Amino acid sequence: MLNIIIFGPPGSGKGTQSEKIIHKYGLIHISTGDILRKEISADTELGKIAASYINHGNLVPDELIIAMLEHELSGIDSSSRGIIFDGFPRTVMQAETLKAILARRKGRVAIMLNLETDRQELIDRLLKRGQTSGRSDDNMETIVQRLNVYESVTAPVINFYKSEGCYRGISRTGTPYEIFKDIETVIDSILKEVS
Ligand code: AP5
Ligand code: MG
Image (cartoon, rainbow, N blue to C red; front, top):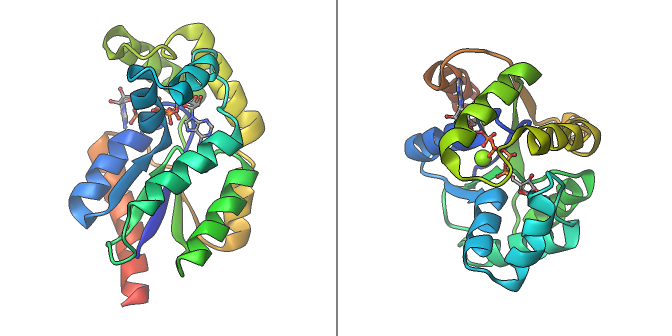
């Protein structure tokens, strides 16, 4: 299985690039943010708890996220081509747990792709999206908190994957298509190594 993490701050293009990766490489998409938003729409117990964190730009507690992820993975056969993890892991604890969960399935993370984007560009993109997205967290106050949480709690995950030897920074600016060209080069080189 080709397991990829698409990583980066809010608005860096994780969802946009995931779609392109899925289309080209046939991977299964797990976006913890999308799953949580579905739970909120369905007004489940998990959704109610998640909303109280998401609406303020804070992270949902690790235990809830990990239980949700394990449930999602239990429906995925290990004969599938692989998984793209979008928005997970977001803490070092989540990264360590993912390593253990995949090891139990005789798998591992092949690449962690970090979408590096300038802070002002992130704010501009999210405010623009907020005009039509209906996302409760796409407003200035919550965006600033999301970015601060990213810097303090999530960015340290980068060092975890550097030490695992699978970190790749994607520093290109440009259109989603141009950024995807760089991502393709990285994924294709990994596929060549394993074939
Ligand atoms: P999540 O849904 O993961 O949101 P996020 O990380 O804040 O990121 P976004 O989805 O807003 O942005 P993105 O990077 O996907 O960019 P996109 O492609 O949409 O998480 C939401 C919340 O859920 C968290 O705050 C937390 O509370 C909770 N949560 C989720 N996972 C969790 C976890 N593991 N642990 C704990 N809590 C968790 O692009 C953004 C915009 O920019 C779009 O409009 C797009 O069209 C545009 N765009 C993209 N690329 C470009 C480009 N190259 N040029 C110009 N515009 C572009
Ligand atoms: Mg997203």
